[in-house]
Length: 359
Image (cartoon, rainbow, N blue to C red; front, side):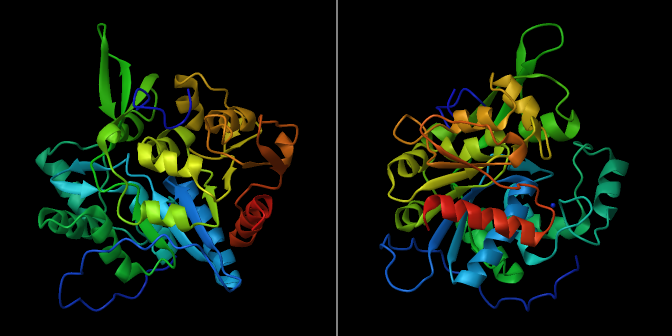
């Protein structure tokens, strides 16, 4: 099964607070899809999700600052969920907090210097779900987002407004303003099957209930968020971050217009393997890949993405030296160190990807 096929498969110090804005922000207008001309700077688009993807963007931003490049991150929304009346966007927030200097460096997700009074009070009331942790600082983000969505602003405009405080240094776009959620089909106790939201499967059950398949609910009718297609059309290179290929990148590619733009666009597409030596760098990509019958290896994920012109999306594929013998039909494979030990090491990965793309 190719990643993004039609649905049948469902992360420092606290920054200074910005002054309150006097008025609600204006809706973002799509940027024109003009070819890049003049100057050394290039337009880089990154498809990204999860904590690993957020950390990869730190390296992309470092390279961009050195080279005068412009970066647009198209972020997975399949993890998004509504709990306690709040709309929560884990991947958008992980990227925003990480690039904005506010992410918890130990947990890798959520806010630094977090407190948990709200969660403790909810538990004291017995308010379900009790398995999802909401930090007090994090709740403020969800309150602002939920209020703006309720007032009619699309997710892309809300994200822009939130980023005005955090100043991530790259443009963040949700893959779609439409509601797309990753659901996981598992066996039901006593027989049959049931679908769980991805957050319940991963946070509550820690991925221990074997997944039968993943379904990207709403993807079949979703449209790209304003600016996404324009960014892809104007890009000099597109990078696939070393995010979970099944639940971080696939929900983005499940939006048909995004996948089509990637497959037919002029910009070379280079992916970075999230698998090193047969194991995921972090997370549960191994469990997700097993559910869709794909080998947990650099070759397996490269083959899952596939080559452009052959039903896939890749022109180049970066693997770690331990996987140096990897071959993906129709794709240029290069072995470089892929451990994101620090920003400098991550930036070296990004430069290697741009080199493979000829940028």
